[in-house]
Image (cartoon, rainbow, N blue to C red):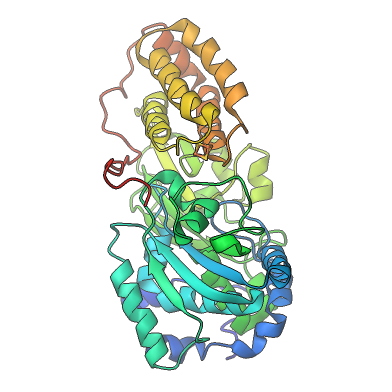
Amino acid sequence: MSAPQTTRYDGRPRLLASWQTTGRTTLLAEHAQVNGPLPVHVVPSLIQLVGAAGLRGRGGAWFPTGRKLATVAENGRAAGGTHVIVNGAESEPAAGKDKLLLRAVPHLVLDGAELAALAVGATQVTVCVHRGAGLADGLRRLVAERAAAGWGSGLPMTVVEPPRWYVSSESTALANFVGGGPGKPRAVSTYVSGVDGKPTLVSNTETMAHLALIARYGPDWFRAAGTGDAPGTALYSVSGAVRASGVYELPVGASGWDVLAAAGGQAAPLQAVLLGGYGGTWVRPDVLAMPFTPEALKQADASPGAGVVVALPQGACGLVETVRVASWLASQNARQCGPCFNGLPAIADDLARLTWARDHNALERLRFRLGIVNKRGACGHPDGVVKLAATALRVFADDVRAHLEGRGCPGWHRPSMLPLPTPPSPNEGWR
Ligand code: SF4
């Protein structure tokens, strides 16, 4: 197939083009017509191609995908095989891109997974989807359809639903679950020991979809969009005070204002924006003028993360929103590490006490706790809560003073801007 654009990016969506045209799932025949067959001939050079394209993982960490593929492939040679997991479990409540990609362009995601699996010497592919999202059965039918049509690599591919806990979509938790264990994180990297002890590539749906296009159209085409450090397009889940909440595709490096403009623009004057996800960063609106790349946002102590952007309007209370989210995140810990198990509820309690109880000691206690809980878990869950709370104290410093002084807060009684899903039932457990 020839690349749709080769020298300049014209702003059209790459991943969501067919969805925007038809508003429905792209069928296998349509996918074949637009993108051509699965390009298995590029597999021997795929890792180099992905490295040259500069693709970085879109699950939140923005780690170079080529390096990840190379490491898993190399470890797999010594270990006698690898496993590939597509991470579509998406437990970020304000995110929607995984669910959209798996509904809109599933074959692009599955193509990417199959090509990645062949490149790293995997013997099995597992697609993890959000439990209760209604995706699993449809995907199983698509996997069967691909096999019946002779499409794909012939590698066994299964679809599973890990539990809905926030931390169950973390890469080591997925490997644990796929291997038959609980959907809880582990301290050992999946690159080294994942499913059944095999080195395991865990990559987000969006990363897999980009990979499928790079395999077809090449690194130069991919680099025509985005920046030198972070090429390509990215998906943003935009919500809050915007006119049209949804998932939007923009070139990496588009500014925050561009991202909001894609969602119809701000629906009210803004006081702050939550970037990356619930374990992300509160920033002031002036950060929206920056290019949304990991490098640029680092100056604001932030990251595009998993592409979550929640605009908080004037009149809402950032502190109240943070208390609610921190309490919810505390309820989602996997009860394995003391600093996380004990520390996160204590952080949420301190936040609540300074927000509602005018407890001046809570602020000092909270600052102390944020210092001792950070980086003390087997996974990054506590670090995310620390970042959320610490940036709330910074961005909403005036509100902290107002709450401690008992001045009225107009945002107290507003409904939550940040969705808080019902936690899994105790019966559901971690399997
Ligand atoms: S840090 Fe928290 S969420 Fe992560 S493994 Fe430990 S207890 Fe579980």
